Length: 141
Image 1 (cartoon, one colour):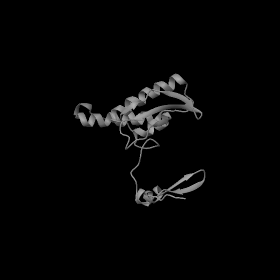
Image 2 (tube, rainbow, N blue to C red):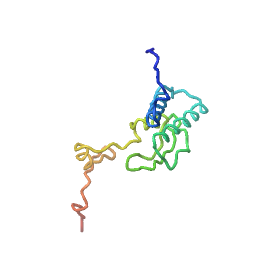
Image 3 (spheres, one colour):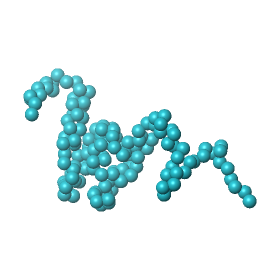
């Protein structure tokens, strides 16, 4: 363990205190063990996670429903900012990753390489190239 951290809380202004609070909350979430929790423990951690999400101004329209799926408890998330975040069923670990702007909830900005991938889609192991509307052709008999 490192040396004790001496912080003069009285010397910090509001933005500095908020940054310190946010850093502490993120670190606590990071140290939490999420696997093997009982349902009451998981729901308590879920409430703590929602509080940290709110502190980071990550907003949602829905984040109350939960169900057992894919071998774990998942929570339904319907984020307010759907251009930046995906709606869906997520684990507590996914929600914690959202605090760090990571994980499957976050829609990352596209790169030039991503533009090439947008032309192709794979369905049932068959690559499909979607044509822009201006190149759409119909077959007539």
